[in-house]
Length: 303
Image 1: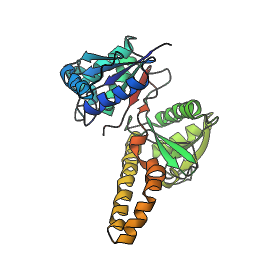
Image 2 (image 1 turned 90 degrees about the vertical axis):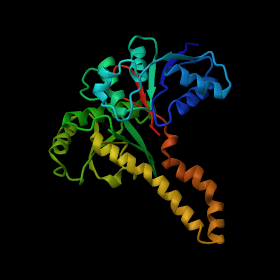
Image 3 (image 1 turned 135 degrees about the horizontal axis):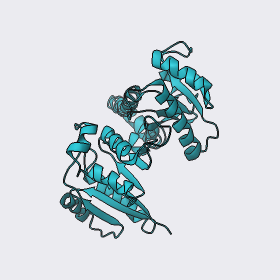
Image 4 (image 1 turned 30 degrees about the horizontal axis):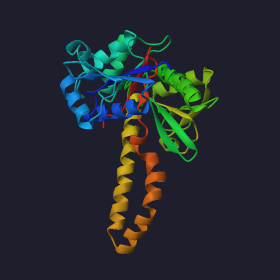
């Protein structure tokens, strides 16, 4: 069996390297014959986390790096000022063919910049994109872009729609994904100049374009893919993530108002947690691929 080698940025995310190492150990234990993991980062800190788990796994390696790209660092400047970061070295290992994929829960902009510059873009791609799954009553809808490209031209939105369609077709088996453009109205004339131009381009494309949709349509399952710029998409994503915590607080407040209400919530808790609330928990969805770069790069949630 051929092994897949994955580089994990052990210093990426809010609680690095704790969660990064813990996740790597789980993956390594589940796939001892097929998976090789390389952890990039501060070797001493990584070894401390490995020792806490009291396991010795031959399919986990460490590549020591001396720098860390923080969430506050400029994405492009960090490539120049921190060449020995866990992020940069991880991407470099993929570029050199020493690894098959790179995963980071760190600075999204920095991951995109490093991957774009070090690995290069696929032909025909002006801007890479990342998408996120949103649960619907009919299954799922993916939104592209959710943070990789904040400022976009109309052509970039068409590229997101194209890459998103290929992804949804191959990963989820949707033969001809239905694509829509996020706007302030369903009419073709609604939206800013970029949206109006993108609408015209998408109409002329070979994609299964369904026209404009509004924000409320993301969760009703009308289409498979919703396209927008990364600024708008990231705001939508972060707002959606807050829904779960609000729902939990509402149930706690309701339960605190009396024994019978607390009993009712307790009886419903299993269903709520495992069926309904689970669909809205971002921790269930893992990382998403950075589409458009010449290599496999996965971006995880920083939290």
